[in-house]
Image 1: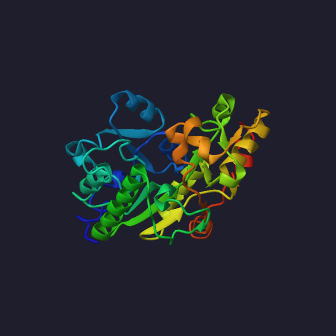
Image 2 (image 1 turned 90 degrees about the vertical axis):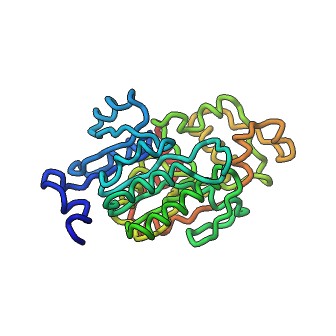
Image 3 (image 1 turned 180 degrees about the vertical axis):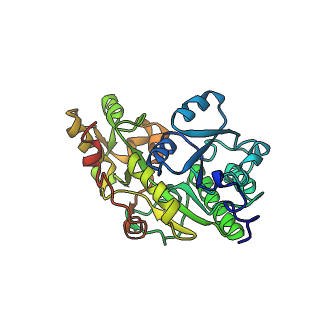
Length: 309
């Protein structure tokens, strides 16, 4: 590749070390930064001037910009030799509500100059839709049912389009429920204290989990080891229905187990946000995560991950 096209070769030597741009540097982004090799230069897009000092304290160079304002993203072109995209689609969208214009804007900006060598996109396992409790590998066709999942699927399409045009290695990580005792809202404790019901066993659904630190390590590993245009389920080995998960957590915390209700009465007893997770059941297969990315989970099940909470 000519030096004027190579993102490293055309720059002075002091800039030739790898530069990782994190887009969506929230809790997981910061954990990814801590998991990175210290020789890597870290940069992060932020739309909040107030966050810049905190990012600098973590050794991250902040770059001002907003995914909802494409004109502010032009400075990202050629900045990162590798890119991590963890920013979610808008929670609400008007017009073409199934589109993720944030990812589309980011891709266009990255194509303005020499594109990065690799890009990791953090998607959602929700793109699979309801699988009736079946074991799900990455080869399964996606059938997103909720508007949020449909926007995630659109973001995946934008990432693949970017891969075809730029020839960058793009890895798509399909992520289930993220938990961690040191993450805001990262354990079931508050829900258990509220006494929120769960479904009775015959109506219950399978859920999937990943500890926030293991997710961060998976993102970092995929950036370097991910195969070209490859999708990975990023989940642990836990195989539990949702109610059993909350029973397990209650026993670990010494709290009462949540009450069980029939699905027929759930609409009156539970908020819509909770109900949406009870409409889909699947068991994610994480074989690629272990065999291809060669990631050994520090928290192989929620028992280890919640034990210290």
